[in-house]
Length: 376
Ligand SMILES: [Zn+2]
Image (tube, rainbow, N blue to C red; front, side, top):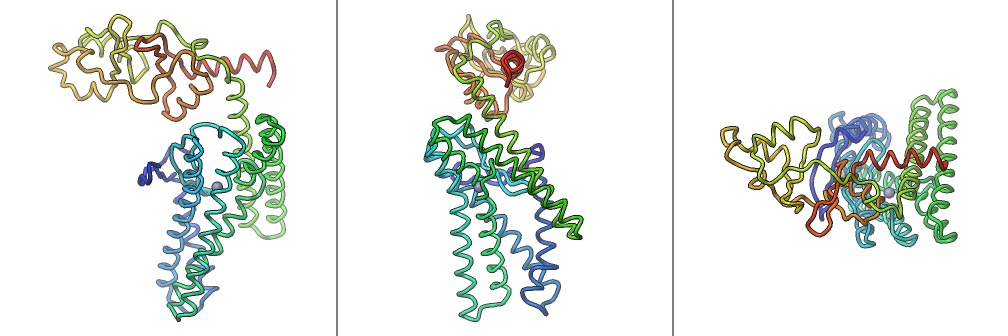
């Protein structure tokens, strides 16, 4: 679902992106606003007016979801949780975390920040609606803010349902976590409740469908399926982190990785490395010292006529942030770094020496074996 995302803008250091699936929802929302909600609220306007009101309402919803996720992200950052960005997709938004929250309190505050933001937005929209009413403002504006007040309150209440990984489920997990001092147990309990809620929602969807409420029925069923999947994935993430915690990266790394000697000509880099190995980035070393990295994009910028004359050492640039890790670092951290940087390989560096490369497939291999031998 995250393969078709468009980067929109960056605000306060957070990248806001849009998943293609969100556009489907935007169209559905605008359509139901133009044809159902606004004509019911105020009758007798022209279809064109209803459509621009619907467009404004959909834009307001978009902004509301972004602000909800910003609420989470800003509190998360203040609590020391690395955040990568915000993506809007079919069922709202996701503030992407680079790791698990460091404490139950941090998780509680982070989870509450979203619904509180939505409640504030609902209050502000309601205030504007009342003000517009009192001052005899255009009925279109009153209607749009009435809708925004309602949708933000609905967003806040829905997200507070204690079904992990919804905000309410995270609040529940943080309370259980604080009570038992055991994140794994708290996650299992919160995820079980989340799955239970999801199944209830799906059952309600099926019942609703057979009683003639087709659209609502399908909507609830799909939402239930989504929560069930998200709940399972979030639990898996915690289990994986737990299994890797305390295991040093050095245990899984390949200590004889593919490296490019600094004196290699670009022509040889292409022939002996790029065409031979599936990697996009190669470490460039000089006598075991890591000089830097060389990647396909840099190579593309060198005209083939210069391939013989230039060397890997000339072209290498410092390896970018999030591509290296220390050998004694936790494998769980290696996994979060990989998912943040979207690269399946990290260079293992001790002082300025390259001592190995750790790959996602090696970590996964360890996890599979461990589950086979020791159970989940
Ligand atoms: Zn939220």
